Image: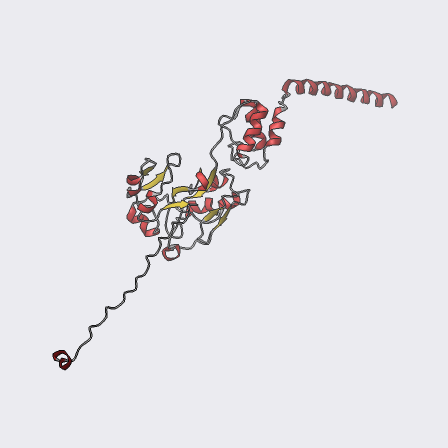
Length: 300
């Protein structure tokens, strides 16, 4: 009996040793040697894992940086230029200062309550509503107002406004692009913040013809092209009945803002126009009435 137990233990020991050696050679064959620089770069990143860089997360972004050896085509939106400078120092490469950006909601509805044609009572998801619903005011391009962008933002930088359209807090926005990706109608766009945060953009993406677009929103762009004609920098183009301002060309002269007949162009963070001084009021003093002299006194 004891001999049988010893034989069983010996057999199990040999089998265990065989698989241990096998696993050792398999591990050596398929082992992945990771550059320790990846950990250093990952520690510099904010750790938001927002996906704004186009990678699966901060770790994947760090791996891409180290594998490439520079930051060309790679940018951490939440970290901005400060994080880019630290990564460049670790990698020993130069980095170009990027223009700060912010999310912009290109939908500025007017009279939505008056133009409301239906009431959506389905699943509160823009992605779902976009497949079965046009919109409360009938605009097939406008914001659906279900808040997918709010749920996607990890920085508490976007909230639904009183008119049912999201409002971006530019102080908190990191331009990660999560809200823009979450919007099924591409209402949200990343644009340069501009000098002193001042920027001009067309707050409409409705591609319907002017008469049709005006039925759903009084602020809809009608594609008249007046803004493009007055722009001295050729920054405005009209395509598919809607105007678009190229923020890389726009100098924020705001000629287009005053020219737009439908108030579809928005200017942000500009100082209020100075009030013209009121002309001093002149008080007219009545001319003295001639004194009538009696005829008797006049003949004497």
